[in-house]
Image (tube, rainbow, N blue to C red; front, side, top):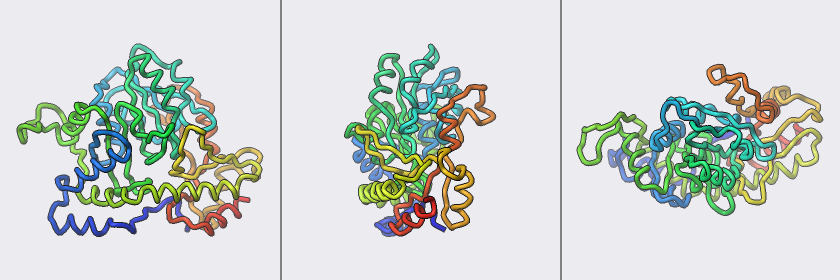
Length: 359
């Protein structure tokens, strides 16, 4: 089976993990946590990084640190992974969905304005499948209406908007280091911000709300959302090779594009002139001109030993989030989209095999 994704752990991961074990520092205290925070935030061009247990809790902590509370509204894309909306629900706020724009499949900035009310407090754009959102327009809207911006950059490590790394374009950005991500720690995540007070707030919240000045004194409700030293050690080793990983992802996408560009009924991913797409997933749309429906193609590829994933089901289709609204572009993308094998270990021969079968 050619997998959709698999981690590449052939750098210093084992060396650094062995160092953790031999030192005895295997939990959330240890030199690798701080070093990983500093190195990753520096890579993204942001002053402060706070490592956390996963990408979902990163979103949760960002919302809390920015003061989002019950009754508030947070604008999110209709097409994304469920964690984006769940984090908003965790703080008692309401996720307000926006349809996708058809080229990059990201949140449509022009539709955000229509959904802003007196209750709107933040915008949470998601850099879907590795292509950055149009952050210039989003930040202009946020500034005009005095809204916070939280980047969900879980799928876009190293992607760029007009030469700036995603994660550096908002009040707080959130990353996931799950096993299928461009940079992985198995599970894990991080919040990035240029605001020292917000960073300190997130740091306190992730550690049971404990005071930095007085150990075991908890002046506020907090959570156990800490990353372990072992996970951070893996992350640091991964970070040492992140540009090589991204180069491989982009090279593989170029190969896919060249082999699928003339296939009737297949729409390829784009890269806008202002963007650097890192192609976390190489994703295509199966249109009506193709001889099979999307799910039929998924089934036939699986029989050939080729694993794939459908696009996310739009969030407004979930029973506990359904308000009877329609988002036609997100719905169409959810029905047509497929993620092809996108592992950094993928060979040119495997891509040729996959595309040959599709053709």
